[in-house]
Image 1: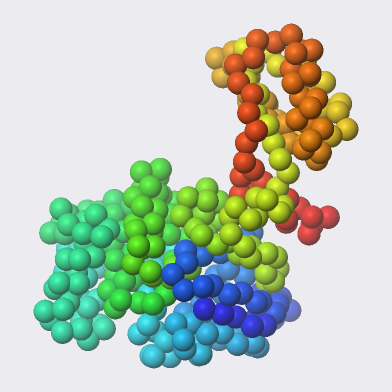
Image 2 (image 1 turned 60 degrees about the vertical axis):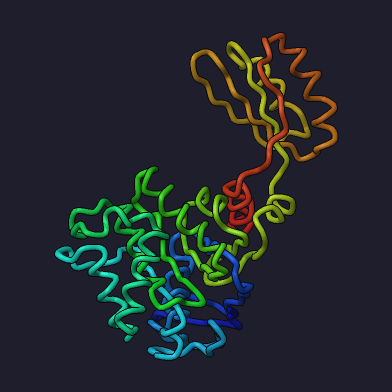
Length: 310
């Protein structure tokens, strides 16, 4: 999948301003950006549901064009708020979708059972969809999007408004798609979900691609190194000393049950490694834990978009 110079205007607003991106086959691609960055507009264009004002795009080997039957026969799409016929059972709904794709009846039945198993709904396939939880409906939505064996699956905020259990269920389903070599393009604002299931991340802002890389590469390139220290008792003496150091970028504190966890982000890794143990000793506080930690994708996101705002 590839975009070259994709552009879209709404009046005076540039929703997409020369967007370039490339997604390798079989990847789970996380598409990130703040509200209004152009994520939904991009999804509409790539699925043939919207028209670009400029640029070109290819999906599943097809040149993207609005309402292209050839394109839409090769992709699957789960909108942010999928709609179902609540009076149908899960099995009946998938059978209905198979009919829309004009699959033979025998293939429709076998494909429906295969997908019900994939998304963990076999035991609930005979229940009406109106009785499904939000997480179950999202998983059924993933199943319907896979009914035609798409080469590329588009997911628009698949875990939005789900509780932790529902999110875990949907993310497990997405992770299993990697085994089937299905390319997944997932637009979301939940950074922890991207860290869990995505191979590659693209961050968009103001209609342009800011960066496109693997999660680990983003951490190495853009996030500052950090250390976590746990103390028993008030960590204020240590925090005061840490904040005064020239190699300190940011100091954050959390506390619970008289245990204080301090996260120190450093702009000079080697100096921090040498001097942090000395600060801990000088604080005189009982030490529970001291470790270097990987930066989160959220820190990368803030670092990148914060620099652009600056």
